[in-house]
Length: 156
Ligand code: 4NP
Image 1 (cartoon, rainbow, N blue to C red):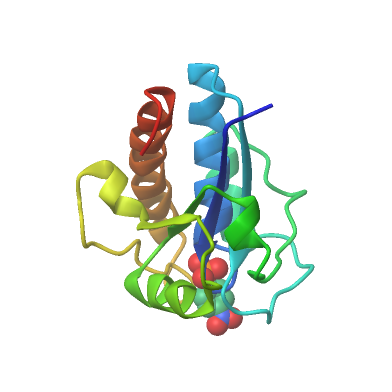
Image 2 (image 1 turned 90 degrees about the horizontal axis):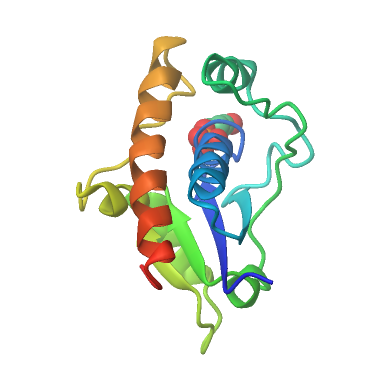
């Protein structure tokens, strides 16, 4: 059983947070860290859909298949089930703070805090070109590594 459970959250759960989930799974595996991992969106428009094709392609370029992931919306239980909820940008973080039930213990953070880039967002690549997804991958990978190392040392 793992002591930690990490949920990555963006707006649609089809671009950034599935890539963050995949990058974090890779880092956790590399470090031999046993941790539950998932991703979700603050919005529910893409519920049940696989990740955006461009996100799937970016993951594949980095050796990971995320074609089996399915989008879902954040729910209240997530704030109890997960020890860490990691937002991609400040809007996602503000939405999570509003949704958080009183007393829920999940620790909320902005993902690039874990890469030493405290208040920076992971820019939404949805409306841009394919290369934006490689920037997303680089951003979420750096943060995934930082977070996985922090958890290996007992906290974050
Ligand atoms: P994500 O990107 O939040 O990184 O999954 C988006 C995906 C879909 C939409 C917006 C952002 N949308 O408006 O449908």
